[in-house]
Amino acid sequence: MKKVLKNVSFMILLLQLCIIFGQDRSAQKRIIIDVGHGGKDSGAIGINSIQEKDVVLNIANAILKLNKELDKPLDIYLTRYTDTLISLSDRTKLAESLKADLFVSLHCNHSDNQEARGVEVYASKKQGGYSKESVWLAFQIQEKFKTKLGFESRGVKFANFQVLRETIDSCAAVLLELGFLSNKDEGSYLSEATNIQFIASIILLSIQN
Image 1 (cartoon, helix red, strand yellow):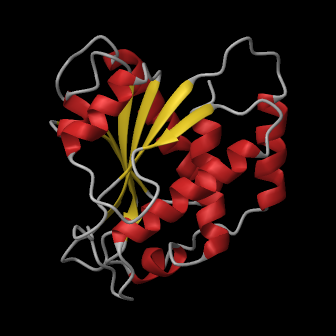
Image 2 (cartoon, helix red, strand yellow; image 1 turned 30 degrees about the vertical axis):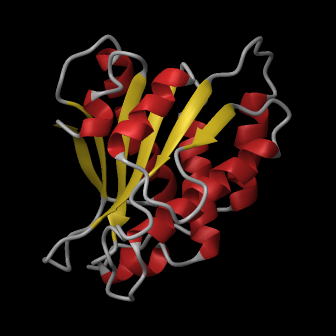
């Protein structure tokens, strides 16, 4: 049976954000949102011709917009703001130079099996000073995507991705694979502006603690 992704109320998610960020916080966390791929590197290409680099930039921009609407926004920076290719080493250097508290890398998945679906969240295979915090956050994000948006959970996984390996000693770091562009349902879902807002709100809710 085809699994249907949830069309949740964006206003409910926004209200949750406002309540959380309305709490007294002396210093907001500094977050680096790593916008995957860019420029000549399109990343995955979906069956409807959408490109991973565009989807993740749309999500990142939606996160920025939602964050600015909050009473006490987080201190968020993107690794790229336009369709530009940034080297992996420069992405991690930005997190170090800005003394980030958290590094979140945004990606979408692809498979030759068009039935493959779901969200994967990765933490660094390499053990570092922020390994425990990274794994905890990975499980929190995975759970929110499953319960609030109805995405299938493919589990928290561990990998030797450069952007994780080179940040794990300076801050918590996770990499998100936000559904399969090669899957008809998820590719279509990720093509809709309203759903991009839902995904952005879930990420913002997840990183506020």
